[in-house]
Image (tube, rainbow, N blue to C red; front, side):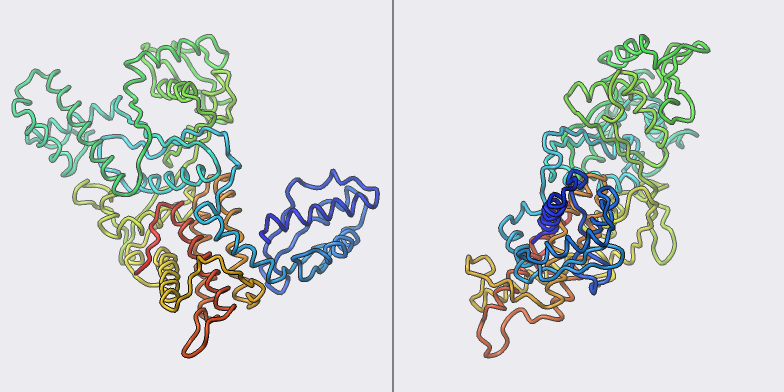
Length: 553
């Protein structure tokens, strides 16, 4: 019996108990909360339903809890029901009912953990979107891992997800990048406000290789040549780095297209007739303070040129015009003001501000031997995504980036990620999958297969460690649903570590395969199925994070 099935059972029984007493069953929540207590002595699951609704129906919580316990006591799948404290219910499942979770996992295979909570939603998920003026740094690497994982998790809940990279190929930062390339091509130091690092010289050299006469061109032509070729080369490198990291996008949207197509002008013209835009001090301002911003924002400057936010306004309109009913922006720590700004933009167009969600990620620091690593040989000033991959590999890099909530700063211990021990979280989880694969291979050598449709007596899985492992398997669907609802992919990583722990404890306590002259029996078959289910859930969870599930390590 899964937690969801148990919650449905408790609610159904509660409705019967209330109705039989002439009380309003409408006070019951749509979904009853059943949770695993921290202390196993308090049962397999517990619910505080009686405490939630007793007052509304005029009963003492414990009186209602006792009535629920009496009715639930005869239910199939429950071994015992106890009332605790002021009205908690502690529930213990029968072993065969717990075993049904194993059968469910094996039956659904790769689909186990998916749901339909977001079915019908069309989501634009924009992440990374780093300026094409240098390699992806660790902050971008964090979004590459977390954003890609979030996209997979949202899709697992039925959403249609478009992963989008906003290519900032317009504005002052591009001009500084181009001037830096030209200076490098001329053998001069970078401009004071420009970009440095070996990558600038590399790209400048590639432009000269393609066009040996580049430096002899008139200034405007030279600038456009270095701009077009240099930005393309830099962005090709960025896309290649992301691809090697396992992160690809469905759409690469060019900011410059919003200006060249007239979309920015059209968006601003539309807003001038809105009460969300007003004219003051010679400029046009967005009323973003109405949505929590610390000040209203200039959209059109006093000289008549559009401010940066004007492009954001046109970009939001473009996304909505493409049919997305939810636009999620994953932005860096210095973009906190964009939450109110983008919601104000939606409202200014007469849209629901709820169509915009902004997730803010915090900084990442790489540490080695207890000291921060600040220098990249190639970038000159920062540690890059490529540096991370070269140091620890894709799997360790992705997992490290995604296992903590993105709204907290992250220190990544390079030495830890290089270890092939249980101290290293990604190794710990992957090793559990590899260990399970080894068990299943050894079983095949003995003529035992976990994928046969033999009758299995799951009631034999009554050991404490078996029950703990099965109940952990049963939580996976809810973990994925919660990770999607809260936009928190780290919940999947932390769950996988709990599952790996439960498996390792089970492995140490319960003999899975027959030893010596012992003949295979029903208990071996049941435990082998439990192993197969555990391996499946580990693989499904790692897949949601974009991390491989190795069969050998």
